[in-house]
Length: 110
Image 1: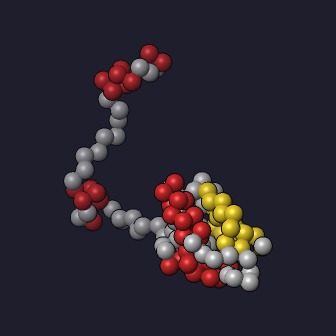
Image 2: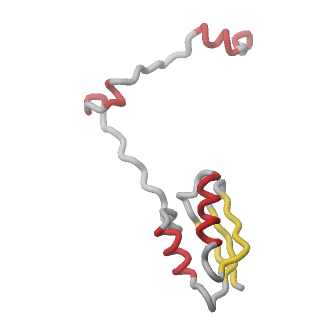
């Protein structure tokens, strides 16, 4: 058995960890799977006579968890006049109201 460590950035929550472990456990020749959403890493042992690292990576990619590829960041709008709902529908509060501070219990600290 050989050891393989993969960086899987799309695995960022516990349900992703469960899904990745399920996908990998169904592969013949894969054993001892350790996955962490905090580290975004999968460490596993595999039998090279049954499966290869590219096959494991391809299986993860086909399931929506491509290893060693950073997640793309969304494009941010340029300015408020872009017509998006972000600027036109959502009310913004830039200062915490005094009533909210008083209810939080931390008011006396300030």
